[in-house]
Image (tube, protein in one colour):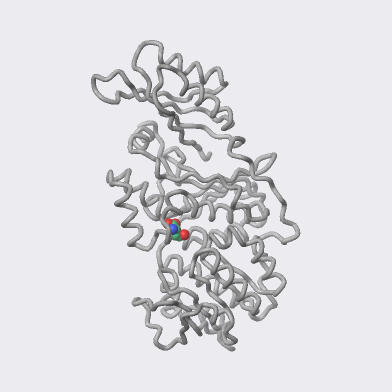
Length: 433
Ligand code: HSE
């Protein structure tokens, strides 16, 4: 049988990993699909010293790959939004199947891309875009297709998890760990995407769409990063039996869906609270199967290449049939539901609160009175001396679940008290039970 001819666009960390995995495992892959997959062409501005591409046609212009008549599958690994969008649309217009690791591209332009691919009868695959090497797209779109999914919650940014883990375990400095994550090839070209939660919001947007069968709605996601997490909060959370993780949460509610990325306290005995370093994990709660969890490397050259190559193999398997039988977002396109994304004020969450208050009689009663007046139930309280001899204490409280707007009002009332100085630190909490 004729080989499947792949054109790789971008030969950076993931592009290089993909080239090497395809080359090294060529025989194993041939046995899986009954055909050879060959790298026909590479489009990259510069070579990757980790790859021997001397036998492959190359061009500095990735659009040459998208138009090349010998290429069957275009693998988009250049990243970014605009050029990547144009490249993928050009490939589709030229009748090529597309494999991409670009979550930003899918989260922002996926609706348009899937529509164009459907008209042309080609596949667009993006497994590597979410949670690196973990086959979570396939698990949700295919393995859980018989379920009604209620919640997807995950650690879906390896860099952020690596930073939080190193800060907790080794008391390392935030900036210093970030530099290491960049060197290891985990971080995005713009690392603020990692630490401010934008990368996780891209991935969560995709997970929510395939879980609930709704269009991609990245612009409605609530996004908060980890850059303001301070060591005291990490320490107090541990004392109370919790870990702080950067979570993406998509939850089906009666009147819409919650779509939010933010630091979250999780009970330390949950499996997901123990996912450390660059590892990712995605928990899915569904009506028939119950809770399942998917764990593995969320970033890095070969883990991500593993997902890219699996997608190339999936596409290759469709070559003897008209096109992939799995729709891009896992639901038939005219059956996608326009589920509203709830504003963050309408989400429901438990909270960790930390504030500075005068250390004098009656203060605790005044503060807890504000919460009680707002109908907020307190689960635990901790008081810590800030500096020996000073009349100021850190007050830490864990609350039961309430609507965010209710908590906003209570926090404003606490901040207005004479006995409280500065602002209240608030971290959402999820028991994930
Ligand atoms: N910057 C991403 C992360 C890479 O750290 O998870 C994988 O998407």
